View: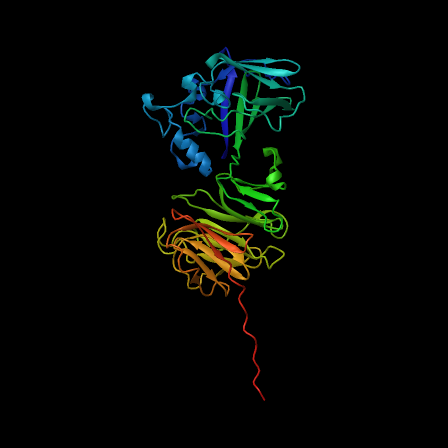
Length: 448
């Protein structure tokens, strides 16, 4: 769902005014009672100190569709979506614990650290709760049962930096006071860096891949037990329907902070993905990443490639290298949400792994493309006016079938039964037999 960083500065309590330079920090010791330098830095009424929910674009988290839907259901009494006290639904106000990481991101007050040989215990003033961080060398559980404060293990990065990793948090809790949601897959890294005897910095890295697959999710066309999915990260598993745990997913590539994968395709483990971020104006941006040719990399896209939402991707099955791909663009060429200048064409093709691109829209109407598949030497497109097909590489297009409603078709799929399936917006799922491969005209020879 998101990855972001929070920085909170704290100093030893009680505070003693002195003009003298603080003494050096004792090695590998964070014990004592600590509190934020300024009270407001610990209260954080609208979220993390340097990442507040204040409506500014630079503070917006890169939610997946599922994450955004969860956020819309939360009714906090703080932040840009705040509601009246009588209408809020903060779980901490009905006797549920605040949980973690919210305990660090709201009302962080004087906190005592008790350090032993095998654990560090944090005693929070607010809510009068405690948290255990194990330091006996154990690893995080790969499939933990969710708990209010999760499971935490700690280690010393150096003599002055204590690193804590936490997973297994309960998704019923909020991440902060502004109602930001998280999943059970949340991972939090805390770095307690003791600057000197009297000062310590707390940095939190919050990483929630939120792999609920409302985001794109596809099987490999050659190895159907290999699945790929996308959020900010591109993920894969090689067990197909035999998968038993989220730990079976492996992160392949990071499409970048603030970027959300919009579509992906995989053929014999060659993967193409497209992303947007921000996904709305102002500041709309899109990109394409792939491992075609070997290592994962972001493509440098030419200026004439449309700057619009990428909603379709297909890899040419006739190219074993996976370097030939088609990219479908949503929106309208001439009038999009940013107006003219968003680029022409709805289907583009590369044959060299994204080095060069060609517009193969042909006589395609200026209508959004939602999905792309290739079958029997033909191209099929799901568009906002139904399904169209081309047998000549995109030079000319025709409507597929006479009776499919003129409505938005959002998804098309090649079935194992030799039919093309089309999922429409509000008009059901339709099927039609695949068209035969186009026949190339035979050369003729003049009779003697």
